[in-house]
Image (cartoon, rainbow, N blue to C red; front, side, top):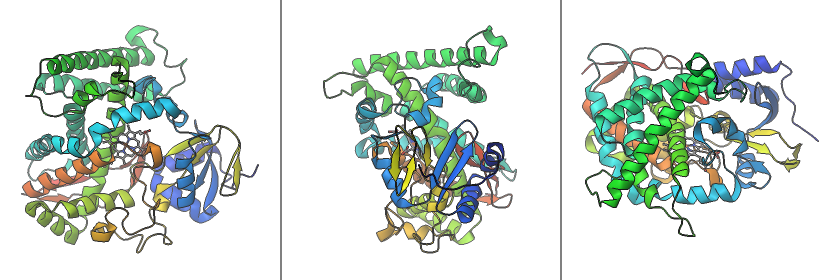
Length: 436
Ligand code: HEM
């Protein structure tokens, strides 16, 4: 057994350092201890973090010895037994094949109008000359996008009920990840466990009714409804011609909400934070928004995801003893590939610390001019983020609608990151002022 060396600090201090400053934590860690490091994080245990594209590639490819589902299993009380996040092997592949078509090419184009409408309505509601938090605004917009485009909810009163309940569940999310004993459904609303399960039941009830409603609408040949993911999933069939069960549909809808809402909101918040502190890029992006130059706006989003990755790594757990790049790890070891370090490695990037959206134009469109496995905000391999193209579309269209409609100025210095759940979020919520 040969695990890489690492800091001697107790797990609680290493965890606190990661939570306080997730981007800086990995940069300091690998500068001090080298490209391969073993750390200890509370509730996760021993983790091997290796800042090397070959390591990232190997951890994506070795689906036999490494489990992604197990690394995400604390989410199961929320996302359920059939979630794409928590399944492995053939079960994962089956769900993934069913979920892919609604997130590809033609289907994505069908969502554009709704994304634009939501972005324009959000920007129109911002106050003039009064500072407000842009991260919260992005959370509102991306929640609407998931509920309307993924869940297919179009009734305003029903949308409101979903939003209220989602907020309640976010407040109770820390209960969901407690050990089973502590989140038991006892004591009614007097205990955190009881409150969590009551909210979850109410949420499941709303989702169940939404699935039935969309199924009935589809059966009656409803062509009024804007294109939505649920509508496509209701028509999906696996290789045996079997449709998804209601439980599978419920679990995947919740999965898409959990994986796709806060991530995209945070990516947008970072994008605005970087743009609003660079007058030249802001001018270029505003011109691009007015002239409809989507390529530059997409480049801005990709560069923001490079410098401020929202998720700091994919996670895998070794299922047996396994050797990768010379390190032999026992069964049960967690593996990370720290994106904040890979994304700024001088051996991989030209001007790694510079904010330079142009690197994503022309020849750099897929990887910013860097080698494969250097830019991984969406992970990779058979578990690569299924919503990556959808997220980039949401970012591009929202940037376009907002920058073409309003003038924003930063109301504070550039943000630093703090870890909220699993997302590296801007600490002060990106305070901005609308000046015109
Ligand atoms: C900027 C926004 C987003 C970021 C940074 C992001 C990042 C990621 C990352 C790092 C993974 C893990 C990949 C791995 O384990 O190898 C992932 C997986 C996933 N993401 Fe995203 N994501 C974003 C938006 C979305 C959206 C909008 C959706 C759907 C609406 C979504 C749905 C998923 C799902 C279902 C998975 C699990 C895929 C699987 O295990 O097969 N994500 N995402």
